[in-house]
Figure 1 (cartoon, rainbow, N blue to C red):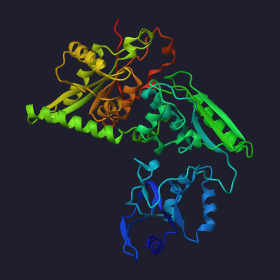
Figure 2 (cartoon, one colour):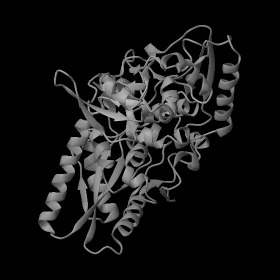
Figure 3 (cartoon, one colour):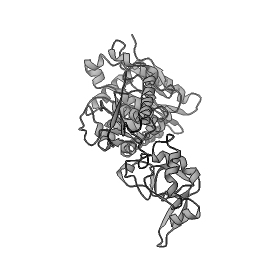
Figure 4 (cartoon, rainbow, N blue to C red):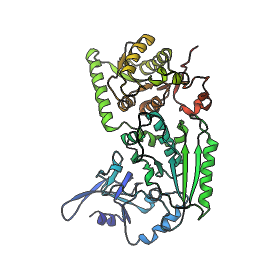
Length: 462
């Protein structure tokens, strides 16, 4: 029935499964002879074009159409999406959500779900090198892992091979200091990237490498040289069947994924289970506040405090800068004024999370309670207790604004908080993340580390 409808609409090409579909027409429903119904859209484009039906009269010309976008697009996904308007492509089963593990949490719809990993544009009619990006090695805890994943994905997007970023997952053995496998699976990053064990390796393989100059330093010349080297090797037909780009470092700069921020924020949206916990926690807090102050509009500000090894172990405390009470007081005053000034019956309350210790964060919360109240003189503080890091992350990303500490975990809470990150001065961050005398500070450039619309305050006094 769907194909008959496509023929009636003069649509020579029908998607049977599609990610992030964009359709011009209204959704309609068609009924089969057996009484089943399925949704139908005409004039659609999107990604994950792994399942489709094409009418016989158009089939012989598909290679020709694809060659027209050769060097403009690198994958079948991108090519079909570019051709969609001209070819009046349709989507069958857009109201059906895919069930497969790769589709979990994505906007994948249709009669088929994603199975194939190979979407190279030219496989089958032209020998063009397959460009892939790999992370050299995971390093660090959640905040570090987020930077490593996002930066490799960002570089793959810059090179036009956004579906070709590979990471060590299934074969990786988690540890307390590098929980990479659980991180990858908790945030369901298989929606946007792939396991390194599935990486293509058709020979000959040409390797290119990008190694960061500093952990918080973005070298645009280095990145442009890499992208140019990829094109040079692609142009040498027959020399490289696979171009493997190995990326190494902490890669802590937003510029590695500049232009692809929406994709990265979607990837690091709060996982469903932790999001539900955070929403319930915030709803309960709001209900408690409303019971004592009717008619008040409450604005929530997330406050992330990093303790643990960075303040308790001399090896780390001598290298990393901390965010002291004066910093938090100044940050709270800034956001209290920004969110409530000129708004009658609007009050600000600060939602405080604390962590950094391995295992339980109870000591971090206890120390933060005592120190923050004394240092800031604020009484409008609510502390999140008995939570885990991902639930804390979910809380922080659901607030109206956020204050972060000198930590990569806090950085990502600020970046992933869409309401705050898209505003001006609604993410407050400390100027220094390393002590000035530390060698680590030589690999730090503030403009590479922090997005330009964040409010930066001093956090080292005396």
